[in-house]
Image (cartoon, rainbow, N blue to C red; front, side, top):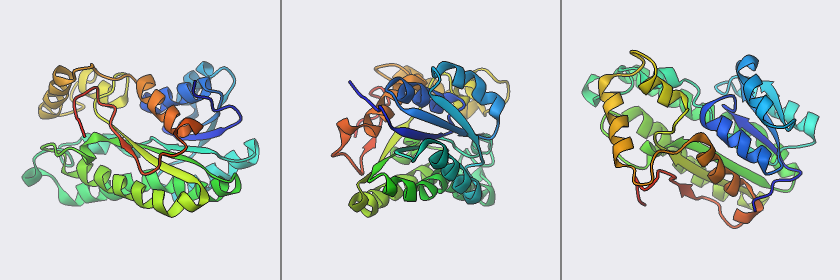
Length: 263
């Protein structure tokens, strides 16, 4: 059974969606979980689920200064950092606009490339801030959560594919650079996940996504042999990669897509 007793985990985007599922699974395995987000009110419901093992530290993942402060406060309050899960997207609403997501000939390249840079920073800032504390602990685990669009070419996803594909390669570079410090770096790529902001935008919010976007999601649901994942399902994968049970895994890219994609 996966155990994370005595470990301190910092999760960006832990106040909802996939990050919430990850937080529940890491806490259930014994970790002290620090949730990062911009709104403490959103964290209250998650903290109530973590049986006293959860804490909130505010900060914007797109800001290197904020992430340095979040990492420092986490290490000071809880004695260090062992696990980092960059789950927050940074600007999911922008990613769904037709200016950024849609046929390449029609998107606004200036907005799309700005989104790509911002999204990459949202994943990497917290890791760079946490590396000194992971080193102090003699090692640790970084588990990126990103889009399967970085592995599988999907029409209309130029920006997402460029961002996520770049992040996947960055995770491999970091896995090589940081292996000497016994810091493992792995990546989890997801598609449609229930009870997430993307799910809400596609199926529960009028006008939040284009008809093309919604139809793509409907096809994914129809074609996933094992069904659509919930946040806790992704949390199980992250918990394994964060634990000692995966101590010889680094540079891995895992795709828990229910059989929709096979690599």
